[in-house]
Image (cartoon, rainbow, N blue to C red; front, top):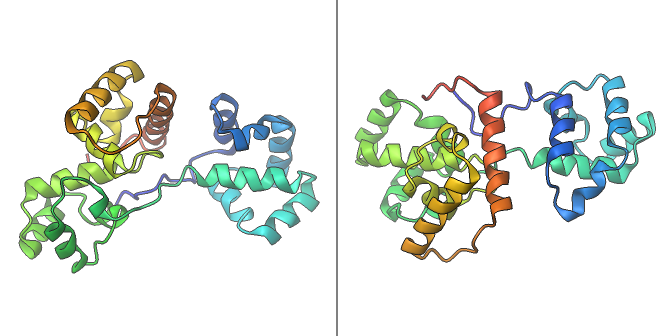
Length: 229
């Protein structure tokens, strides 16, 4: 089974360092650039090798204080680092957040303990699972494939229900298809679909779209052989 959220174990500390170096940070995290190399070297001396270990060791305020005292990294830096690390973990949301999915579908899926994007992605990944769920719920397999594609796209940080639908209507069906496009082409399709459908959302800038494309690329690099494709 492929997990909904990015696998943080193969996400090396070195890769995380590089992502912070090249990424256009939000204003509140720009200070992560200050002292970055020195602080990451200190984390490596503690035996931290990947994002999974980093998230665990910075799990709460007491742990952050302990790490700060052991390696000399300021607490405020570690707090920001924890938030940045957490931004790589996809946050599930209700299936009803996808426009165009009938309420009757989302309600009947709840009876099968499928309540959000993570539940669906991890439970309805292959043909056998879709066939079973279709029999149990009466939802056509074609619509289950549609919902799965939307859930897959929602794994990209920054992609919510409406944006996933826009990407889907632009002809993109997976994170891997999305990562293969470029920002200029995607921006053109994004604005065409948005204008056609008139969704009540704030238009994303090219920088926002590039952020999503970069994250999708990272997902494909860390999981080049997805089980569901």
